[in-house]
Image (cartoon, rainbow, N blue to C red; front, side, top):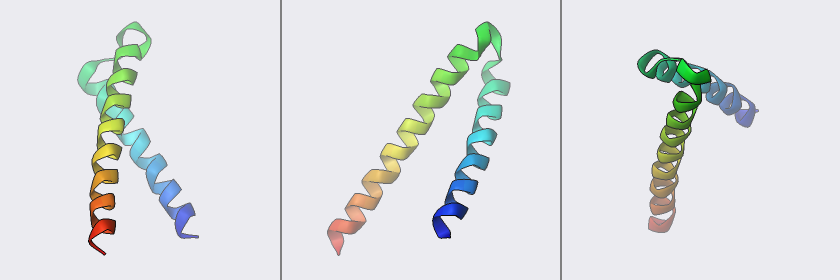
Length: 60
């Protein structure tokens, strides 16, 4: 049940971040640049979160 709520929240954030990237960088050339920027931002965020979770697990 909790995983389902997490998925819904992730999809909502996905849409919000995509809209933000499109509005900031425009939707030119089919939005390819905006999609790469979005992918880089999400990858960086997930890497940071994963490292923090890993550090917290090591403390236990």
